[in-house]
Image (tube, rainbow, N blue to C red; front, side):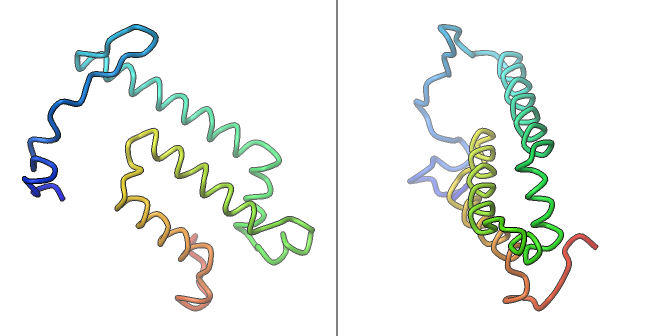
Length: 127
């Protein structure tokens, strides 16, 4: 896709995309983009920190350790996995990583990590 001149104009990129405007402020210079990037990075860090240090994060840690045990405690493991996958895709989209290739690869990796017994045999990815 990067070198497909007819569709994406190759390495030159897509022309005519307007500069972002946030609350009436035009983002035009590299320094403005850097500041905007740091703001979004801080926002994503804050969201992830709040998620991991909440009861929701505790359930996710339990699912990571042993999803069958979390299921036996009455947690809807499937719902938690779908929810955190959606949150992760949303956060990835903030960084511009939610392209088609990234979403497909992310879905495949997530599926392999969530269901390793069916594809790779029993394996612990954290070792």
